[in-house]
Length: 188
Image 1 (cartoon, rainbow, N blue to C red):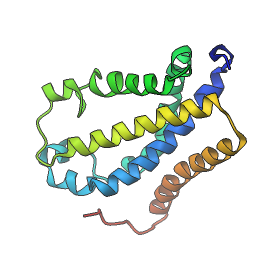
Image 2: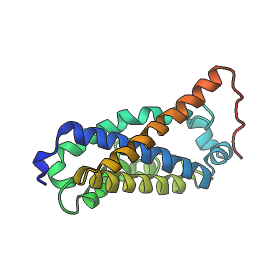
Image 3: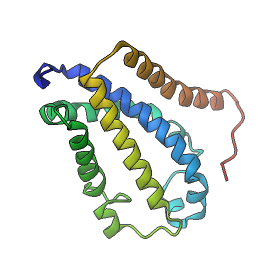
Image 4: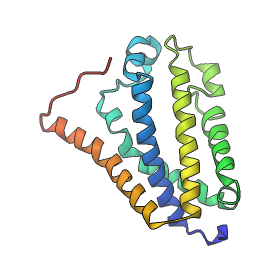
């Protein structure tokens, strides 16, 4: 398959869906493993700058990911000759880590700018976040690469169902809170 034969919407939609699914699944796992709710609550630096994990905007996080995934997809399309060629998943992952994590323009945790401009976190929150970012970006790179290069009906269905669930679960949670549903206590 020639990378020039890849359609814009094919790359953008697949990337959008894979990003949303991997963001949601890795986020759920990291939230549990790294105890983000407790880490934010115990860390005055993070508590002052981050929303609580039970904040409606945080709970709605997966609902914003299709937009972010579409932006990734647009960039991946522009770089398609490299990132969807042989070994492209590795190039894609390295590019995401270098540009999107380590050398980001914002003073984000795990970045060079973050090391310069952010105060150290006493909870060690930084390292859990870095593991989450590395895992999610690896999955985004590998799954998008494979799905774009080898589209299959079963993959369309699998990612489609997971994508729908990634959006329906937070939407249902937000709607149940608005309808008077019980508010879950923050996790310890």
